[in-house]
Image 1 (cartoon, rainbow, N blue to C red):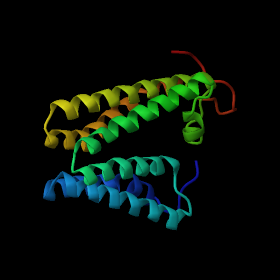
Image 2 (image 1 turned 90 degrees about the horizontal axis):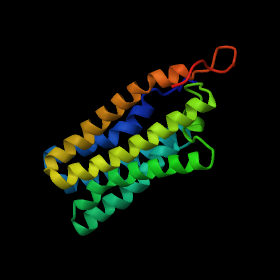
Image 3 (image 1 turned 45 degrees about the horizontal axis):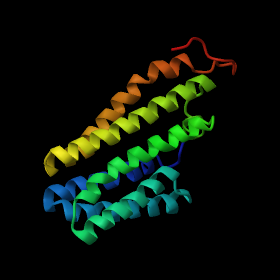
Amino acid sequence: MTKTRYPWLRPTVDYGPLAAFFITYWLFGLMPATGAIIAATAVALALSLIVERRVPIMPLVTAAVVGVFGGLTLWFQDETFIKMKPTIVQASFSIVLLGGLAMGKPLLKPLMGTAWQMDDVGWRRFTLRFAIFFAAMAGLNELVWRTQSTDFWVNYKIFGILALTFIFVATQIPLMQRHQLAEDGGEARGDD
């Protein structure tokens, strides 16, 4: 994996808009926070383009969804749209990953293959597990925003989704280790 000359850039692009949303929400409310996340996302993408001369695909997709659903939220003054955004994003990721698997392509391999070397069976299982996780997270977001207060949902969106994602990834380490390619490039040992 190559080292970036700007180690601060990735966390800024990934978490800066969330921080702007959270702080603005607690100071001014949901509608201003929606405007803040749209603006912060645009700034993060511009910063990535200026510094690295490229925009990573995942932040670009997220920015498009934030722009659409955030824009609808502000236009109609209806918080439903921004609350549905995580559902749409997570469900879309699940559908794309499952579609890739149906076509025989574990799509996480080209995205993460430089960071972790696994055999093809490992990549298929890893991709399937992530697809199921994203589907479950989409369902959970629907449950939370439809049954809980906006304050609860904002905390879930900022902290809950992040914590659940870290926990899920940690539970996948044994799979990644079992299917890790040997140093000599040979196949990994064992199965699930």
